[in-house]
Length: 61
Image 1 (tube, rainbow, N blue to C red):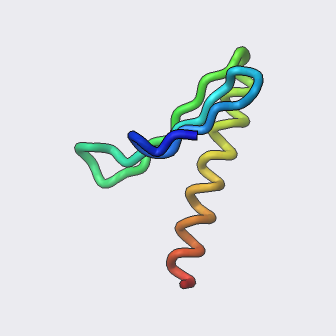
Image 2: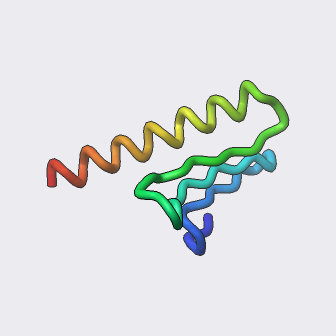
Protein backbone atom coordinates (compact mmCIF):
# COMPACT_ATOMS: atom_id res chain seq x y z
CA UNK A 1 0.00 0.00 0.00
CA UNK A 2 1.21 3.50 -0.80
CA UNK A 3 -0.30 6.87 0.14
CA UNK A 4 2.17 9.01 -1.83
CA UNK A 5 -0.24 10.13 -4.56
CA UNK A 6 -3.61 9.00 -3.29
CA UNK A 7 -4.11 5.44 -2.06
CA UNK A 8 -2.61 2.63 -4.14
CA UNK A 9 -3.15 -1.00 -3.25
CA UNK A 10 -1.04 -3.77 -4.78
CA UNK A 11 -2.24 -7.37 -4.75
CA UNK A 12 -0.15 -10.56 -4.68
CA UNK A 13 -1.10 -11.39 -8.29
CA UNK A 14 0.28 -8.07 -9.58
CA UNK A 15 -3.07 -6.27 -9.85
CA UNK A 16 -3.35 -2.79 -8.40
CA UNK A 17 -6.02 -0.22 -7.53
CA UNK A 18 -5.38 3.53 -7.16
CA UNK A 19 -7.77 6.13 -5.77
CA UNK A 20 -6.62 9.74 -5.92
CA UNK A 21 -7.94 13.27 -6.04
CA UNK A 22 -7.66 15.08 -9.36
CA UNK A 23 -5.17 17.91 -9.30
CA UNK A 24 -7.30 20.06 -11.61
CA UNK A 25 -10.93 19.17 -10.88
CA UNK A 26 -13.02 18.55 -7.75
CA UNK A 27 -13.25 14.80 -8.45
CA UNK A 28 -11.74 11.59 -7.16
CA UNK A 29 -10.30 9.28 -9.80
CA UNK A 30 -10.11 5.49 -9.58
CA UNK A 31 -7.59 3.53 -11.67
CA UNK A 32 -6.89 -0.19 -11.88
CA UNK A 33 -4.64 -2.62 -13.70
CA UNK A 34 -4.99 -6.39 -14.07
CA UNK A 35 -4.40 -9.20 -16.54
CA UNK A 36 -7.99 -9.12 -17.82
CA UNK A 37 -10.63 -6.50 -18.47
CA UNK A 38 -13.11 -8.39 -16.27
CA UNK A 39 -10.71 -8.11 -13.33
CA UNK A 40 -10.10 -4.42 -14.07
CA UNK A 41 -13.85 -3.79 -14.04
CA UNK A 42 -14.20 -5.67 -10.73
CA UNK A 43 -11.35 -3.66 -9.18
CA UNK A 44 -12.82 -0.37 -10.41
CA UNK A 45 -16.23 -1.31 -9.01
CA UNK A 46 -14.68 -2.19 -5.65
CA UNK A 47 -12.72 1.08 -5.62
CA UNK A 48 -15.82 3.16 -6.29
CA UNK A 49 -17.68 1.30 -3.54
CA UNK A 50 -14.83 2.02 -1.09
CA UNK A 51 -14.90 5.72 -1.95
CA UNK A 52 -18.69 5.90 -1.65
CA UNK A 53 -18.66 4.07 1.71
CA UNK A 54 -15.94 6.36 3.06
CA UNK A 55 -17.96 9.40 1.95
CA UNK A 56 -21.11 8.11 3.65
CA UNK A 57 -19.23 7.37 6.88
CA UNK A 58 -17.61 10.81 6.85
CA UNK A 59 -20.96 12.58 6.41
CA UNK A 60 -22.63 10.40 9.06
CA UNK A 61 -19.80 11.21 11.45
